[in-house]
Image (cartoon, rainbow, N blue to C red; front, side, top):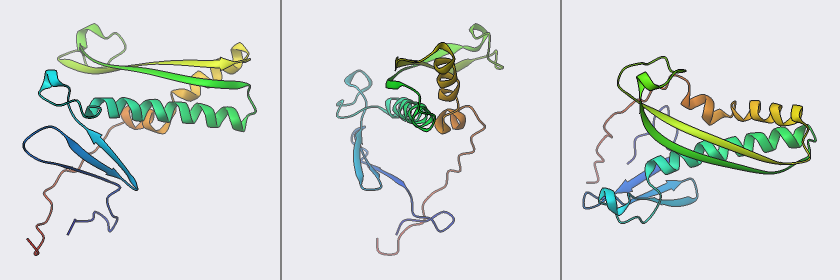
Length: 154
């Protein structure tokens, strides 16, 4: 039996074997696959974990911008969010607090199409930086890791 934290069922369950990197992800009623590329020893049967992280940020950014535009009747037609993940030296990052070691960097490029004024475009770019996933990734994150309780049926 799966352990529930704070009496809530898990929203995401990831299952995989020890023989390869392929993982089956259950997110509510949706089933996804994650894997690593062949260069990392995987079979490339699905996006890698960082692809999912970037997809989450990109989807949230686009949804947030679209919602704001709809609520304010802005003439936004399409949103394209392109993302890249890299590792950089802290000393090479002017805007970063950490100056030692390696840091993760996510570059996000947002393309907005439609008959937007410069002011409307600027406001939507400001809104893009406030999507919930962006705020989560730039805040302090506390991850509680623990072993699952063993089922008596095993």
